[in-house]
Image 1 (spheres, rainbow, N blue to C red):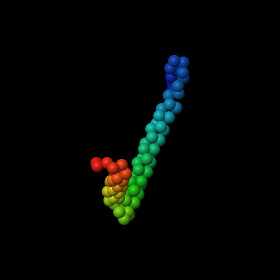
Image 2 (image 1 turned 180 degrees about the vertical axis):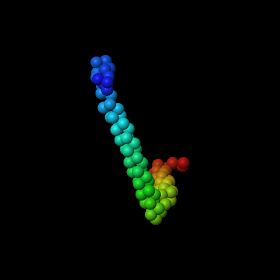
Image 3 (image 1 turned 90 degrees about the horizontal axis):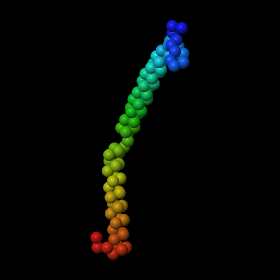
Image 4 (image 1 turned 90 degrees about the vertical axis):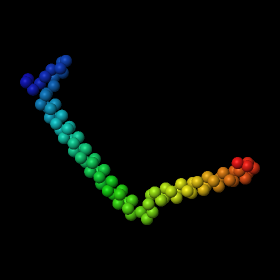
Length: 87
């Protein structure tokens, strides 16, 4: 009964509890290490993919923004022409 302790009528096996805590800690560390490895692999793959692109993502974004501004201006001009607004 030395390894057992009674808490409010609940008998707990302390060695089994300690073993579970240790295994949970080890499992958490292994899980964190695995997650770090996955993140590193995905980061490396993403960086390689970005380097293989013909056009840089910033250039694509600038082109899309320019296209959106042109389309907005054309829409605004068409609306003004339709409604006869001087603005």
